[in-house]
Every structure is written in C-alpha cells, then in structure tokens.
Length: 168
Image 1 (tube, rainbow, N blue to C red):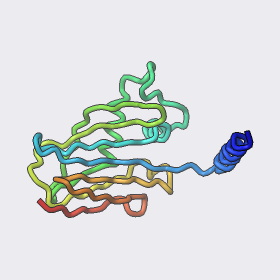
Image 2: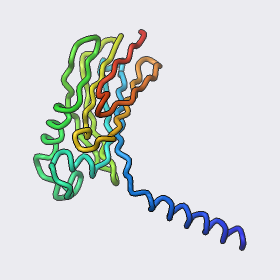
Image 3: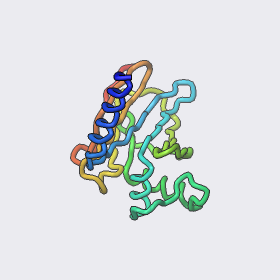
Image 4: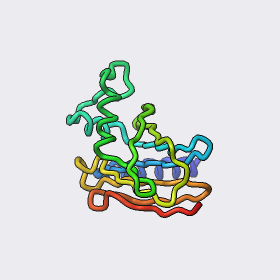
C-alpha cells in the first residue's frame, strides 16, 4: 500500500512540475532517405500541427489540417509554404520537391515529399527555415540516410542551412 501511495505522489509531483513550465518546445524533424531502387530522395517532415497551422494561416486559431472541414486549398497552401522555406541541393544542384501528401496524427503532421532522378550523392545541402519566422527558438532537426550512412544536423533561425558530405 505504501508503495502505491509513494508512486502516486511521485506521479502527482511530476505533473505539477511539468505543468509549471510555460515554455513550449519548438522543434521539427526532417528525415531524408535515399532509395537506391527508385533513385529518389524520400523526404519526410514531422511538425507539430498547431505550429504548422499558425504558419500557413497567419492565425493562432485552428486551420483544420486533417479535419473533416479541412479547407480544399490546404495541400496547395502547405506545399507553397514548404517550397518557400525548405530546399535541398544535391551535389551542387538545387532540386524541386515533389509533394506526395500529408497525414495528421494527433498533434503532429507528417508531410511526404520526394526528389526523383538521384543516382548518387557526394554532398547534400539542406536549408530549413520552417517556423523560424514565428518562433525565435525553433529547432529543425535533419537526419540523412544514404547507403548505410546516417548523419544529421541541427538548424535554426541563425543557422538555417548545412551541408553533409557522404561517401559512395
């Protein structure tokens, strides 16, 4: 019985401590993975939905991504926002992202894009300004997977792009 009370008190204390923090974390994750069979870079973005809605709508009220009443222009507005704030350069050549779609899951939106016609990569430069116009402390994590290699970079408002060198 004492063990159960102790665990309940610890849990309650953790809830009080966590709820006392008013600072929200602003972070996104981008996974760039080379698919050798299709000669494509598969780019998956994971972004908090409320932050993304604020960015594309300019308003802090819910935009409706993934909801029944999602505006019909949502995908084109989202893709426009990505094109404006995110880019990939492979081996010194800037490529356009092909928008595949999105999935809204709880409080996170997954965005799927790809770049076709990539045979090999010696260097990849990623520029990611997403959400940095809204949040000064926004952190955009980028992970790159290429032929068994895994490398990453941390981007933010002051350091919005980086280059990763890879080996064939």
